[in-house]
Image 1: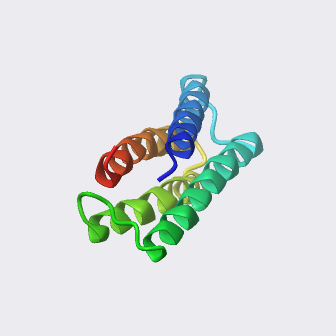
Image 2: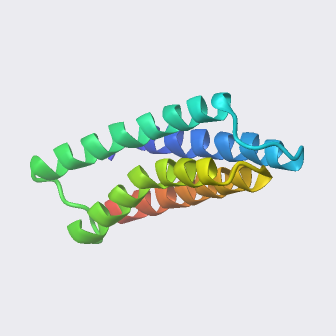
Length: 119
């Protein structure tokens, strides 16, 4: 895996979590700007998914197993979109809390992906 991409995705996810956490603190639901931020973080996760699949196709192997790596890779890919859809269903401050939690979960998944690959 690309270490720089993993770090960038984790940092972007934490920034999104802080931003949505601030909105929740101010009693605001997710707004259009938050969804743009979610799109940016999701784009980073898509790039990571593609790179991970390409590396697996080239024959590179994660230290802790391919199955668990692919499972974490798919979970990281789906984390922010799932939180975004849930925040659309809950148009209160709790929608912002959901996205903030999704950002934290994505950052943790990135650390785990780094460990699984052999970092």
